[in-house]
Amino acid sequence: MGYVPISFVDFRDVALAYDGQAGFAVEDISLSIAPGEFVSIVGPSGCGKSTFMKLATGLKAPTRGSVTVEGAPVTGPLKIVGMAFQAPTLLPWRTTLRNVVLPLEIVEPYRSTFKRDRAMFEDRARALLRTVGLDGYAEKYPWELSGGMQQRASICRALVHQPKMLLLDEPFGALDAFTREELWCLLRDLWTEQQFTVILVTHDLREAVFLADTVYVMSARPGRIVGRRSVDLARPRELDVIYTDAFTDIVHDLRERIGRVRQ
Amino acid sequence: MKRERLETAAPWIVAIVLLLVWQAICTAFRVSDFIFPSPYTITVSLIEYAGPIAGHAWQTFWTTMIGFAIGVAVGLSLGIAVGTSRFVYKGLYPLLVAFNAIPKVAFVPILVVWFGIGTIPAVLTAFLISFFPIVVNVATGLATLEPELEDVLRSLGATKADILWKVGLPRSLPYFFASLKVSITLAFIGTVVSETVASNQGIGYLMMSAGSSMRMPLVFAGLAVIGVMAMAMYELFAVLERRMTRWAHRGDIS
Image 1 (cartoon, chains in turn yellow, cyan):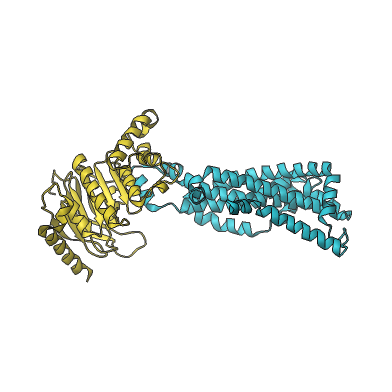
Image 2: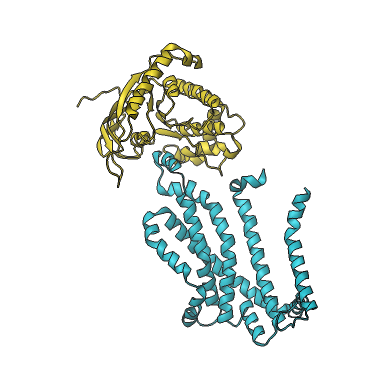
């Protein structure tokens, strides 16, 4: 087997069938993601993007093939990942700050020292909230925050335990266009600064291209990777890049490929 | 502001109007006290027999509280089991539903055979009638957990116990408190039913014996006392609910 030392996540001929369902949800998935790479996955609804996420985090074991992260086969929940979804899924009985520190109460090594180091952890969460512009909202409850603010808090929760990989499942899908663009830039800055690996699942091609190094196109069920496109736009990217020809060409190319798999 | 004050006063206004109409009908048609006593005669007998009524009310009250406490403990445990385990849900739930459909008064003779006449059958009837709503509500609260949230926690290596503790239980608290309000009133029903059939103490017994000696105002006084006790306990749990689960009632406080 050709082992590629530089890859961080490695999928080899992966297929997954859910219990009691005919056929595979995803199949023939082979790809490798470098450390610190920003990857987007786009495709029509129901193409198994969420299944892909479950495989990458170890929440589901592949029916066929193998998933490797950091050179070791994935056998269970990874603990080095952070996740955020379209719904912010914050706990309404906890303040924003206590929502953000929640992973530290669960994941090792923070868990065992949580009681002792609580003040330090809370300071870290506060610093993170500051970087996403939620200064002064730490003691507010999630339901006192707007949708965009809740999503920022949700991203903080995904990052507080300093994961090596961030998995985002349509995190900006429910936001208005302006808030969405704001959060694109926020995510870009966090990624530039902290250099974690990102897998972003999205319907929005502009979002995928603006943020990612590599965009994968998935087909409808059973989901397969049917295209891979590197985005060679220079970094750091400003929002203006969206209106350049190079950007539109890539979006057009991807749009055409998705059009083909939808037929 | 004015509307708010009106809302607070509404239950009192309705109660007073109802009592006045009742009294008016009894007076106007000269309804016999042996058939349908008026609020006035009921009040008179409440005052006249205040001592014995208080004694029997106290008996009914603590009997109900013990039965209810057992109901909460059992209901909570069963609710957690049913809400967290698919296997328990599939296996136990149909049985619980069938059990709940049986009129609890049918159990009283059996309980009397086992434990004799008195407090124990009343406690057990209160328990049997009150635990089911708690099971259903706690199980519902646990079963409606967002799958995404579970994924977030599981991907961090959270155990089932972690998820139950950090998310499941706090999330079911509003459901739990809502069921307490229903259960406490049911527990009173259970106690009184059992006392009526098989006891020589408690409001149920008092009403039974007053009825057999044709003292209808005293029977109605017993009814009034049960109603007031149940209402007071309901309100207590409603206040507790609002205190404990403020986040679930955010509409009311803003």
